[in-house]
Image (tube, rainbow, N blue to C red; front, side, top):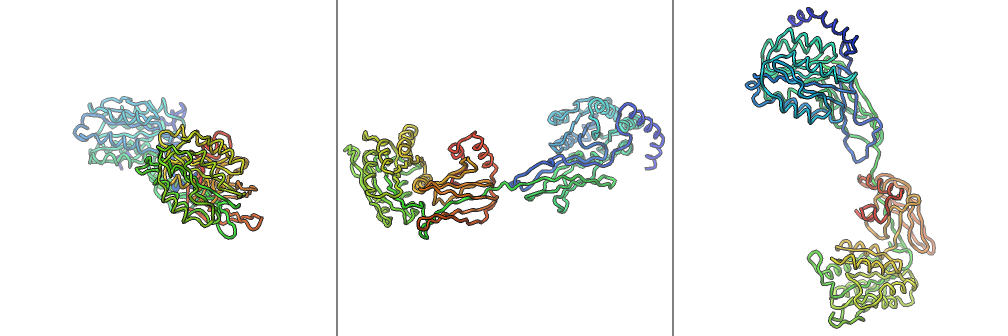
Length: 616
């Protein structure tokens, strides 16, 4: 230390002179700037969603210049001696590791200088870190050691392309000693340009240690000495590049946690809470000074609310506020022997019809008709349609027994079966519907579309479920859609057991729509056990009953709202039950509703894409 003081007293005047000259020519500051720290990401106006439990905090801290920019020069010894002192080139691996650990969001320019007996700029300053890594990887090992040549080459590049008010740092690596006087003169120039030199020595050379210690001390830097070359990668990361020893992070007054510090940049992760979050980054310099940077970011609760709509009549849950009669017409033609997912379609359909029969509410009058179930296909019997179970509230067991006995045999006389179904309702004048479950189109020359129109004229709606259509789906879809649309009914396809069950629920129950303002954003059916997931907001639910029912509902994040309509006598009232659900992101749904409101997308397309419908 005494030697250092004597040496630097001798050329203190040189430092002062160079500093004055630097000021006169627009060079760097005469002394290192005070400690500064800046959080660069997230920005103060950042808004996080509630699905993000942790947020990345990144920034720059420095005692040697501004924190908006960091200009860094690697000055790397490439002398011949490294072939023996560092045969596996840990030197390059360490420098590359430091580059790769720098904050990706920080504005950093990096250049690379190699030196042996002379200095060479092998990579001009760039923001492209891939180029820097390649330059560090390709450095040679030949020649002698001239520290001054390397420093002066780096200073020339900093003077030409360094940015105003940046933190300027030279990362000097060597394994040996050099001309002391020339090195001191280079340190004087570095000090005059406001560039700090951080030095890293491989080995234990006494003179080399003294020279590097003097260079770093004079420019506000520090020296790290490593005897084992395999320790170089960690040593590069441990260098206090900008004079900062530690950075800690805290949020909303929590206990500080250490940030990862690399090359003057820091990175860390903090948990956020819904609402405003004050994030504080505290830097401590090597000499013990402290400074903090604070921002406030907002985390909005972007979780979904769950909405279910139910109906109650005479004290029991129903799928329609009106008295309702539904006849299920089942395709039992020969084509139902076709296989889906390894099983005959008829087997799958029978299992689901049996299952759904337990779901049908008791107040629903049901009937069951089948076609193609009695005469073999060869007989071409186009009158093969039978009412298996007539209308009744208490016929679920007979329906299940009739379903179990179905055996696919014959033709597909859809028009004839629909005509017969119209007669099955008799004098009933309640809410009436036919649900046709089929895997194919008319095979008897009838006109199912005309039959559907005639049912509509009687006040009967026809819903069609296209089940397991297979490779001819396009042709059959158009035909079956026409049947449903001719009566004002729904057409639904079902390619699996679960889809068939969902389709039956959808077509039997009274439908409802959900509006945000004048835009329909969702739809569902009474009796479904799967809620609609929607973002927070004010909505209007309209039940497609006779007469229609309309209810306003307000949803907050994580609400679970069951909206129940109750019919007593001739009047209908409604009430809400509220609970809470676990977090479920609604970011995609917010975007989908915005597209619906702007007319960029139709509800049909949005529902096909998975938003929003009665689905998990």
